Amino acid sequence: MAILKVPRLDTFTRENLVLEQSEIVFDIDLNIFFGGDGETQGGIELGSKGGVRFYREKITLNSDQVESGIILLDRLPDSPDSVRLIPQNGIEQDYNEDFEVSGNQLIFKDKGLDGFLEIGETVYIYYTSLPNTIN
Image (cartoon, rainbow, N blue to C red; front, side):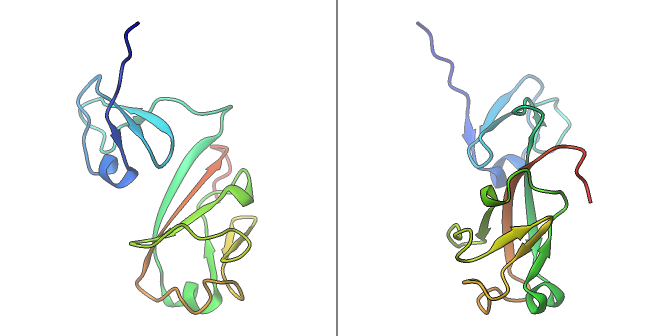
């Protein structure tokens, strides 16, 4: 039995590549395959689960976000408690303990991250959403 192994990359690395036509990679952060067309930065998503797509937002925090303790997401997460938040050079934060999600708002006010996130800091937010739930 033959086993095909494709390259496994984190999202940051994949997004900084232009995959060759027919080249396939697996994004280990999003758990999804991407294919190359020789032109598209980061490749093209090859599939999604039940119409739900995986999204990653890279956000550099501004003063309004830090002061309010709220980050507005581009889309409405499919399942709020599956949202992942990882500060750059940090570890994944705990849902309910460090932040929560209501609608498209990621809220860290009065949570574990309140007072720790700073203006200019970059955070990565991963979640699933239906494609038509754009804000």
